[in-house]
Image (cartoon, rainbow, N blue to C red; front, side, top):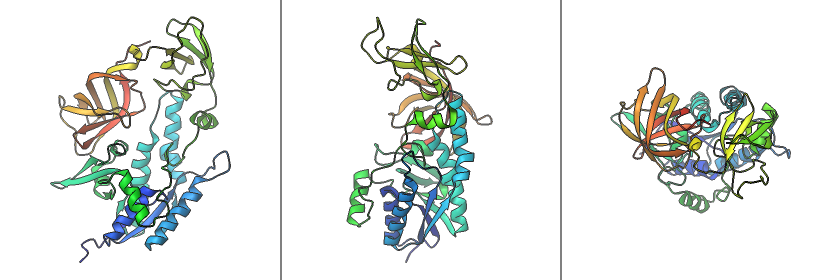
Length: 368
């Protein structure tokens, strides 16, 4: 007899991961429905709207599985709660990660509210992560596929948000997900994975940001003060970047890559170096704000691991200071970290368990 009587709403994006998530739950004879989120209204420069194709794919899969299907437009909520923050951060010269805010504010808040209105008590997504409940507390775990683990992007969820979510493919390798989709006759089994900005897609970032923030040209200087090139705006670049700097042959310089090691919004000066491990790119300490601890903050002095970017290997660190009232923490790494970038997120782990994280505010990299 089926033990799961309550309806689960599956977030269906039209991709293979969410499609297999829905298929797995239907195979368990779970009461499910699918819902597609459209969070972006504008077409790409070629006049193609990826969301139109995605919603058709999602509906086709729902029809195949014979489950109810709903489509909702959250474009206003996405703009107000995610994209406006994204633009503000870039305008300040920082490098935000909109996927994290999108998960917390849209996929696990707005989506949940609409799912509830449609009679669902829980939701399921195609994220590569796992959930365990111990003593009534939901724990967020890394996905079994280390190359696809997405716990980094879910660290800002609250325990209550996590408690109402399921991740059907978290125990699977990506290759297995595609194999299951093909065996089940799911039409998107070979569909390419989406990349790029959450819900906006694969766009050339400089041109995309330029539409909203405009160009604010300035100069590119070396560490000895020489001007070697012009740039269209420091907000188009990030620390450690080496591609797309527009630096040609520089007299007296080596034939080696240049790296962004500093940006100044006010003076519009971007500083570069050919030294990969320049002191301005190496940090042993950072502070983070807007911290979220899914199951409560560890004590100061606790040894943890952290990632300062997606897919980075876990880095040993010590939580040297924590203030949950102010959403602040400070950590110290065992080894120097490269290009730790304000605006990005630091995410904390204890083994496979994702403890939470925060937005990087400051590092002790050498000033330039």
